[in-house]
Image 1 (cartoon, helix red, strand yellow):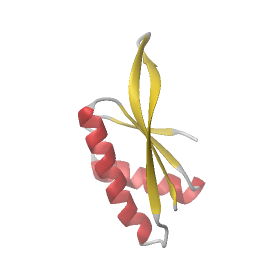
Image 2 (image 1 turned 180 degrees about the vertical axis):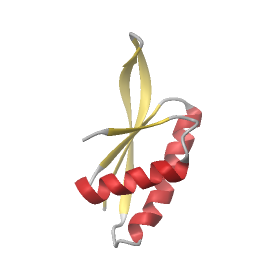
Image 3 (image 1 turned 90 degrees about the vertical axis):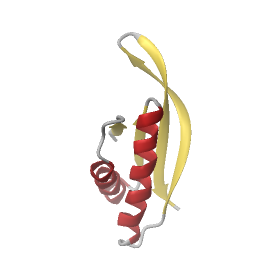
Image 4 (image 1 turned 135 degrees about the horizontal axis):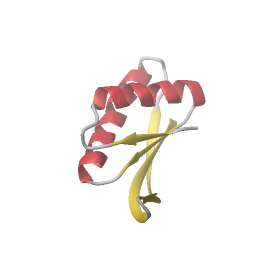
Length: 86
């Protein structure tokens, strides 16, 4: 499964649509964000995606966790939001 990567410039509605699509297809989505602005956009997108999925009768929850990613040879801490049905 692909990880949906979010930046501070990401459009929340587009990310929400991607989250909803992945959850519909795979029953689980992983969203990754690095930095406060990106995490803000990711959380808003999850909230919007919940609304999209409720229309389909799916009630989803978001499980946040820390993860390490390597960018340009440097290790960075990211937030991973796991979105799955309750």
